[in-house]
Image (tube, rainbow, N blue to C red; front, side, top):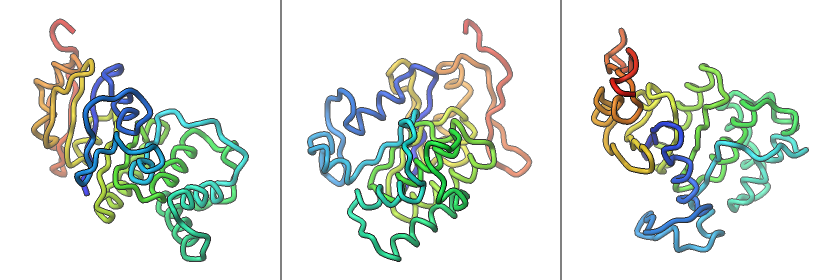
Length: 230
C-alpha cells in the first residue's frame, strides 16, 4: 500500500478531484482499480471499495462515538460480535480517542470529529481511501499521530490512500508519491523529492523556497519569501 499526497494552492481543484473519484461530482474517463472502472459501478458497489472523508464533516448527530463507528463497520458488511467491537476499540485507542467512546458526536470539537471521521473511514477497510484535509483541525501532536497511523494502516492493508494536505513538509515526511495541481492542471507527478523542488514551489505557490535536510536527515521545505512576480 502507498500514500499519495495531493498538493496545490487553494482553488487548484484538489477537493473537486476527490469528489469526482468518490462519485460525488461530474467526472469523465476512467478510474481503474484492479482492472475495474470504479466510475462505472453503481454507487453502492463503489462505496464498498472507495471511502471518502470530506474536508467539511456533516453536522454532528446525537449518537455516541462508539455507536457511530460500529454503524460504519456494519455498513461495510461487519457483524455485531465481540471481535468486531474489540477492533473498533483498538482503532480508537490507536487514534488516542478511546476516552471519547461514550461521548456524543454533537458535543465533540472539530478536531475530535475529524479523528472520529477517520476511524469511521478506516473501519470500513476500503481499497481506496480518500482523505480531504484530514489534519486541518488537529494540533501538531495529532497530525503526526494520524499520519503515522494512516501510513501503518495503508501498508498493513495494502490499500491506496490519497490525502490532501497543505503542509508540504508532511508530504515530504509521510507520502510515497506526490501529485501537484494548479488551476486544475497536473504539474507534478512522482516521488516527493522529484516533485517538490524550488522550481515547483515558485511555479505552483509563487514562493521562493529551499528543500534541505534537518539535523536528523529528514528533508524539509524552508520558505524564504515570495517569488518574483507573485
